[in-house]
Length: 592
Image (cartoon, rainbow, N blue to C red; front, side, top):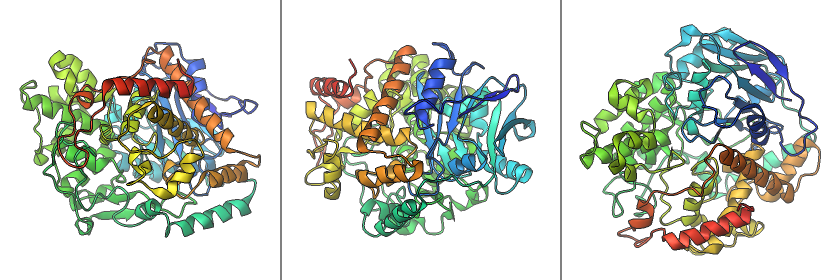
């Protein structure tokens, strides 16, 4: 039963969707509302555009893997449905305030925030918060509404309609991708504040407690869970540099040795700001907060796994303080590190090739803080240009710059290189909401030699047999589609992919038992895959309605420039093989 909030009129109503099957109150319901309540072709910044924020029927439950909140709207970056998930305590905050979902339309006359409390929603002016970063905004709203309030806020980037502006929840947990922060800004919505501590009810508390105990014990045995739990954490890149072809270096242009350093674990010493406290009910505190000393006071957001690559190697930078500082600024200003890094890398390569006068330069660590500020505030011609994202910037600069915009559907690629992991490339190209690194598990994890062998039985349950990571054939297409469907089911139910099958502790049997224990009705693998397919179908249908339902083309560089050296030498996405794999991928999902 979502709240329908009209910021123009101030009206708030409830809509009963409880008799509908299969939406679980999450992104599937949001997509239905998006299709039903908005006309085709609507500009994402139009007041009639719909913004959906939900914990759903499972998100916010005090149990492992159930902390996600979904943020959904037509993306100003891609023009199709933009779906982003925030981990941390915000989903529990929505539930504690007496709600499961909000659908927001209209535009407030002045900058405002929504207050959810005691099962009611109200709108309040917040003009005095204009220009504040997400941390200061959260401080101010907690001072006003109570220290226990949970806050989803935008920074200056959202107010200035940067097309890849993020929403940051409870200081550390961003809903980063696809520009949902700009949709907040277009609605004059600075934040959503949730007040209340009513726990989400579960049907079988003993079963939930048993699963939590199992998960806690698994932290010592599951290598990825242990990596997430320890220091410097899952996102703290350490050790030997990745082999050429694993990660983007200088806008995917360097295909041999990077010549860049990866930090050692001790380099993170003294840079941790604080623990985030983790996700309610989950014993694994995955998201660590790091920043150089000059930024520690702003309590910057958590360090995601993509930040070091996107804001570091992709820009030719390997200085840890520079990368941590850039990530902290992104979170406080409300910017997606992936799209920012991709857009800056595009501009740097254009400048290097003489296609962008006075553009930024690779390796220029000292200039990065100023560039981030200029993008977030649209300062100057360059800041305003890059705030549009790489694809739109290329369209303005001219056709000779287009090959260097590493985008799909207008969204910048994550920095995991698909030339040696073609399943990732298929996911980038075909996922109907745009490229995302956590849409499906990486090919290397299922390599028979180098992969995570303990995950193979789980993958086989959805007919994803191990195969050499670089193999690109029709079976790669089918296998990748099956993995996408599985993780789509997790997204549909707001289950955490970083806790779940096939590589993390919550196996398929644990996941289905968890959903059954929370909802009180039997839930099976078939139900999970059905939810995943339904979400993908709805995303695909919406994209087609908005004119973005095409095949999805990867940048030509990934087809034409092979990896030059190292163990993955020669890795490249052969066009004909990729087309055959894509056709098999589509056929597996039933798309024609």
